[in-house]
Each structure stands twice: as structure tokens, then as C-alpha cells.
Amino acid sequence: MKAIVQERYGSPDDLDLREVDKPVVGDDEVLVRVRAASIHPDVWHVVAGRPYVLRLMGAGFSKPRNPIPGTDMAGIVESVGKSVTRFRPGDPVFGETIVAHQWIHGGAFAEYVAVHQDLLAPKPANVTFEQAASVPASGLIALQNLRGLSQWRPGQRVLINGAGGGVGALALQMMKAHGAHVTAVDSTGKLGMLRSLGADEVVDYRREDFTQRGIRYNLIFDVPGNRPFSIIRRALEPDGRYVLIGHEGFGASRKRVFGLVPHFLKLMALSRFVKQLQGPGLPMPTKKEAIAVLRELLESGKITPIIDSTFHLSEVREAFRRMIEGETQGKVILTPSEAVEQRHAASE
Ligand SMILES: NC(=O)c1ccc[n+]([C@@H]2O[C@H](COP(=O)([O-])OP(=O)(O)OC[C@H]3O[C@@H](n4cnc5c(N)ncnc54)[C@H](OP(=O)(O)O)[C@@H]3O)[C@@H](O)[C@H]2O)c1
Image (cartoon, rainbow, N blue to C red; front, top):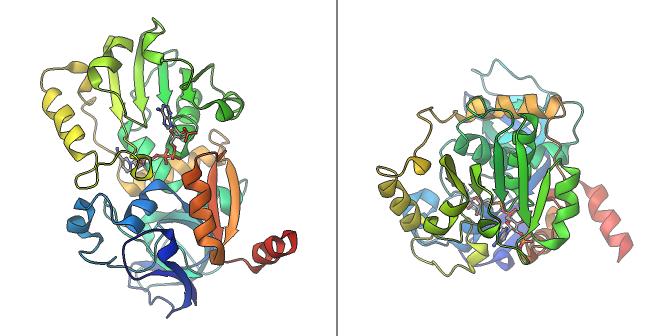
């Protein structure tokens, strides 16, 4: 099969399209013929091998342990392992390809990938393969950090910082579907998209500092995480919550060794004393639970993924550049479909 292969850490320029062996499925695995896979910042982290700590956390010490990047995909079931009961050949599915919570390549940038059955859900008929492939990692990050949606109450004031990105756009729609009043913060070019996704108010972070608006929120969901909590706190209700996701700006944060890990550890230590940093005492949904919730949200139309652009596997370097440039309106998708390759060749 054709797949993107990376033999050393570096940059998207170290990614090549090659012929490799098709994966062999284990007993609990499903072989999926990939129709679409999405690019997100965590794939970039493993391609770059930064922060360096990820190399000690299972990604591979001197080069990626799994040479094929990508963790999010949608496609058609080709065959199933002998213990698989939930899927049959021909089923359209979507999901995440990595079992653990870690920075690691997951083999999705290929024509076929083997995925544990618990990480897959049937693809709802009302979304395209591209849309379904854009959701898993971002949706899991949003749902797991929100500890599900049941604890949040209609009418609560929620601010989503970085609402125009992969995680923020889904968190915005989830909280709107849950009846929250949502203020969405991002750059100028994304504000129209945020309004169309249901944001009640939008703030351009290049022109206005949301901590200076004199408004206090019940929840601040912070994707960039580029301000100290002491400043964020000015905009939080005394019993409000702060949820940090954290974004390293594709290396711009210059935290090359440990990334944002020290920042998270500091907040964890502070949370013993500060209620706004304490979790709600609810368990994190498992990946199996979260993918089932994401399927329901897609099927009911409560979340509508936005696709910025679709590239053929052979255009993987351009696809990464498009994501890193930061002008995207929605997710960047990769596909093995020859139709996209021909369309792009024809437009050149
Ligand atoms: N905490 C966790 O549990 C966890 C787990 C896994 C992954 N992660 C991290 O989660 C992040 C996922 O982010 P994503 O997929 O949503 O990224 P993304 O698609 O790149 O979106 C980030 C958004 O933030 C905006 N932004 C940048 N600087 C900003 C600022 N100063 N103020 C407000 N908005 C700003 C960007 O807009 P412009 O580019 O237009 O400026 C962009 O729209 C990754 O960094 C990943 O490593 C967290």
C-alpha cells in the first residue's frame, strides 16, 4: 500500500510517500481502508520530535517508533480480527488509531490502517469522510478536558480562547448545544466562522484582551494557554473553572525540552489551593465512551466539522505548511483518493 513514511525526526520535509506492507490485523483490530485522515498539532509534535520529552514517552528515542504518522481517520472496513463483533467489512467508520494518551504516530496517513475496535464508531451518514476524520483527536481533547458535558448548565457564561482551531471549534459547538452563552476568541479572519458556528460574542485577540473586558466567566477553556493563571483569573467567577489545553505554536513557544509540562505541573500544584483549578470530581470519559458521544453529536447535527482544505497523500508537506501558516478556516485533510491528486494537478 501507499503510506507516508518518516525515518527521522525533523520537519514535514522529512515525510515521503512510499510503498510499504499493508498492516496485519490483531484479534481485536479492524483493517480500515482510509478515505480521509486529518492533520492536527500533535501530529506535528511527533514529526518534529519536540518537545524532546515525547521521545522518552513512547514516540521513539532517536526516530519515530511507528514511521507512519497520523492518528485521526475515516474510511471503510476492509476486514476484521477474529474477536471483533461490532464491525463488518463494508461498514463506514471513523476514529482515532492510538490506544494510549500520548504523542505517538498512529499510521493513519496511509491507504490502510489497523485500529482497535474500541477506538472506532460507525460514521454518521450526514457527514462526509473528511468531516468525520477531522473530529477524533480534537473532540477527545475537548470532551476529556470538559469531563463530558453533563456537569455544565444552560445559561453559563463560557469563554473559549483559540475557538477557531480544531479543539476550540468543537468545544464551542458542544457548549452551545448545551445551552451556554459562548464568547469565542481568535484572530480576525476566523471571527465570521465563529459566528456561523453559533458564538454569541466574538473577540479578536489581536485587538482586545479578554481579561480586560470586565466580564467574569463560569468557564474559561484556554487552547493557547499563553498567559499566566494570575491574569486569566481576573475574568473568572470565584466558583468558575479554568481548563487549560495548551498550544506550543508549532515550536514558537521555544519550550523545546519539556514543552508545557512544567506549566501543567505548576497548575496542578496550585489546584490544591485554588478552586477554579480543581476538576469537577468526574472521571475522564474513556476513548471508547468519547468516540460514541462524538458520533451522537455529529449525527444529531450538534457539531458540524469545518474543512479548510483537502490534500492528496503525495502533498503531505504542503498540507502541513497550510496548517502551520495558521490562516486555516477548519481542518486540513489528507486523502489517498486519486481524484484529489488529479484535481490538484489540473488546477496547477
Ligand atoms: N491538554 C490536553 O489534554 C491536550 C491533549 C492533547 C493535545 N493537546 C494540545 O491541544 C492543542 C490543540 O489545538 P488545536 O488543534 O485546537 O490547534 P489549532 O487548530 O492550531 O488552533 C489553535 C487556535 O488558537 C488560535 N490562537 C493562537 N494564538 C492565540 C492567542 N494568543 N489567543 C487566542 N487564540 C489564539 C489560533 O489562531 P491563529 O493561528 O489564527 O492566530 C488557532 O485558531 C495542541 O497544541 C495539542 O498539543 C492538549
